[in-house]
Image (tube, rainbow, N blue to C red; front, side, top):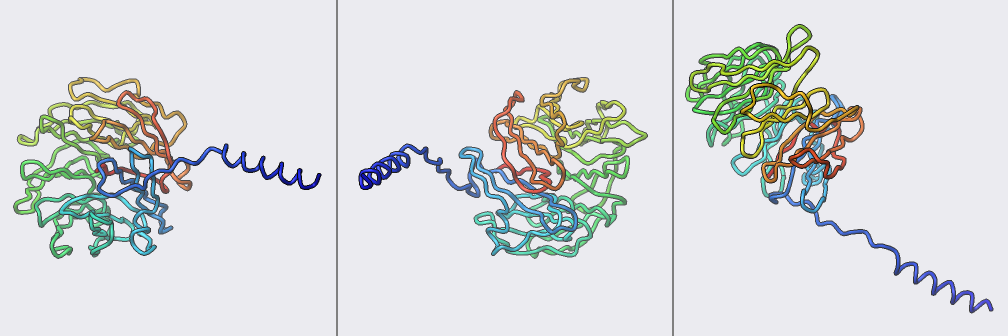
Length: 342
């Protein structure tokens, strides 16, 4: 009787093993894949927990702390602000660590460190050998030699330099603490003019007509606005004002450069460049979420938005289709602020 009981349980156990559903096997996220997405995770100020996540939009595979994984478990640093791909390298700006890490684009391994900054924010490649780096506290824009990976000069620019774009041998540089967007002649590295776009300007992009759009979020005394600039005449062609109490951020453009997106009060808004008024209804309603970062995938128009939650937990990344329909979500690092799409 005892033997029959043992045999019975062995057969039952074997059947349970066979019937148990197997976990799906996901392929690893791969650098340089057309479906790979880098997620910039600022981390907490002073905590040295900045990171980069690598996500594969086709398979759903995710690798958090990708930099640490590829670089002998070394920490990236304190406050990862931005990442730029250029010259077969990735340039990762680490703000509070006052450096830019230069990474090989084939394996994400560090090949050099550019140091000597005060508080770097964003990098703008100008020529094959030269780039500008904006700074928070330095009152100038650094000029970097991309061959030697050293700072070779600076462009005086009072206040907080932030996002930048390049067109017609001019660099347009936003300054959140000023009313002006500065215009730099990239041939002689000198400021040649400025455009009054209002206080709080940081986001900037270019549309399909080569017109520049600047988003200024205003302050307690001044409403935010979106401005369109003619890069040749430097004249403002259109200005659209937000309402009191709104603080729009993260201006982005889609694949065809005919539609703008931005965050406002934890909602995602969509704005065709042909519109003469700002949208009143959001494309994506964030409700009580804390939307912090926004990106538009140029491959398929999908919308990536990060919920910082409480600035301590890992951010939740939400993916929506072009119509604002939810597709998927996953957790990246702490305080995800942006995306780089391959």
